[in-house]
Length: 216
Image (cartoon, rainbow, N blue to C red; front, side, top):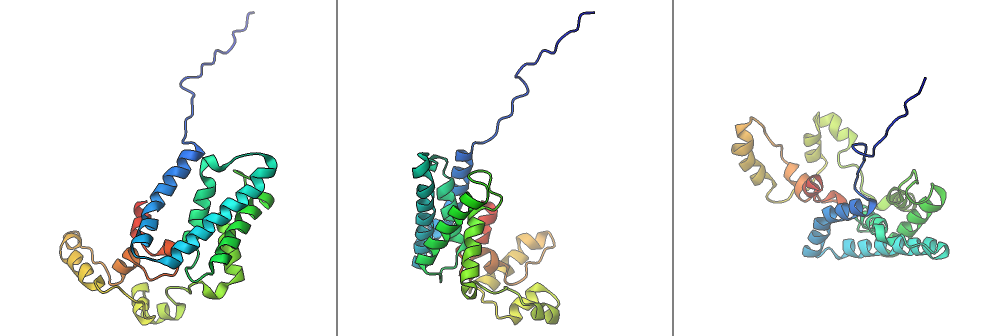
């Protein structure tokens, strides 16, 4: 008895997905508005730390790529890692430490945690952890304290008790939204939301303009 074989064609069994380079470029572009705002408001400390973190990640990649004679700058991962690290570090952190933790985070992840594309701990997370361990005191405390939550009964009441600083137009914008667009749907926006999503007073740049992050 003659056995028929399988006939396999490439279509429609073709899987296409964005390349690493494209994903890095797209993610970097979504972060570009954050950097542009920092430039417009003249946040020199944040921009210096951002440049220092980028420098640290680039130096770390050079230390790894030159001996191996491989150029991995083309995929944009190094630039994206440095950009994310700079945005997640407090502006009160010394630029030299920002450079050092970015360099260490990228290098440690590459060497100890699996190498490029397979490390189980991301270099950005590694860098921020190193910075937190070395100078925990300069990182911001919890926005809402446990005692405040217990006394107020909700997070927004605790924000007021913990002296959360709101922008000047917070109440007026919230009131206008509640009486117009949100009021139509029966929604009431509590005070403090405009500040939290518009321009939160955080020393970490990535946690300031949260509405832009959500859109990104």
